[in-house]
Length: 503
Ligand code: NAD
Image 1: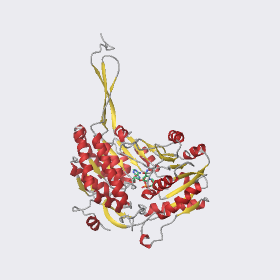
Image 2: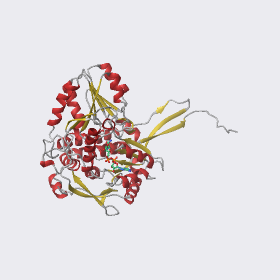
Image 3: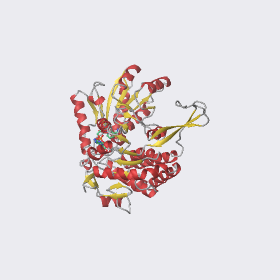
Image 4: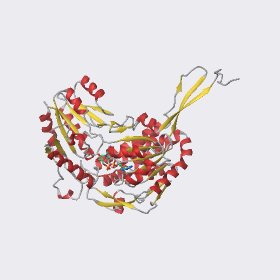
């Protein structure tokens, strides 16, 4: 589907934007270069999108610097009101945004429409409401002095977003930064730039002043790298792979910018012998197959107590085989294609790796046979039994509809196995025993733990990881702390403290 057809399909009167958004205007890249963005259902070109280079980053940063004094001094409630208006506009354009997201990423429309878009609106609404509720403190210091703290915005922040949830992650990154009074230069992933550009357009409609928000599609190694290096950017917030996260940290060293990282994960999803098996089977399918497994918090290590492993798999495998793969725009589709052919091949490479290491492919492991899907980036839901928790398929983030099954004997072994990766993002467990649940909640190396559920997120609940999963937290009050710095102000109200050099 090409841009004009897409525009008709989503019922848009104005053209779908495919230029850079700088200083309130859609403009071509200084170099004139573009990048195609593809529909992963059939790999057809949707649009040629302007590709930002270093000059464009400089232009966007300069615009953001100009906008910062007025934006940061504006009443917090006014900033919030713009975000609240944006949330409404997102809801008004929900069908269109969902279609755009599904075309660009391969998310099934029912997920884009009922999860991604409402969560995007909810995030802007939450931080719109937060803008005038986030405050400093008064500290009880020595007599005669008043000491209080100001939470000040950082300035221009750079944000680099991946391709797995481009719409939602644009909101997760922009909303707290803007509520706190920062200006933003955001780079969407080169393969999924369209929904962030549409958000920029809706921002302008919501009344966002020019220059406060800038959206620059472009290559990670060029525009992304330069955002991380840029001397006038105060902070870089990144979601993506751990390897690139390390490069961002190095690139940030020049001006010692603040860094926030949401990196990979290898979520342990632990099913104990006393779990409600139906709930655990369904929850585990959601944990790994939602969004084709392209989620940093996916439950990609399915750890089963050996007593219930067979009974669990007897239900889980047929469920996985029954998942309806198809064109993301069909209302009945439960799993769409992976977001790029390159990524599909990478995931299939892990199936080969599993076989080479003596793992057993219990289901899937190949593209579907359906001829209607043969031009797309599809993979069947894949379940692989690993030989050992040290195998690469039990250690590395596959980021696809690929779950690695491991079995354990007792709680201690389960805990050691769950904590035996470099990652520490999300983990879940299914059990009826309260004490066990809380022990695991405390001892799992993870930023998020789900008990008798998996993969819950909410704009009020901190999101982020430890270890190779990064640092810093999105969402909630934590996100507002991440996008502000504290200033401590001392006032001599009635202290009689002689200065040192009094004569
Ligand atoms: P990536 O880390 O290369 O890309 C993520 C974002 O970073 C994109 O916007 C990209 O343009 C940008 N980027 C790339 N190189 C950069 C650089 N040098 N400086 C600044 N920005 C740069 O991820 P990918 O190649 O798209 O995916 C590879 C793997 O990353 C996946 O298989 C998965 O394991 C992981 N991943 C994790 C998440 C997550 O949510 N944690 C999201 C996407 C990818």
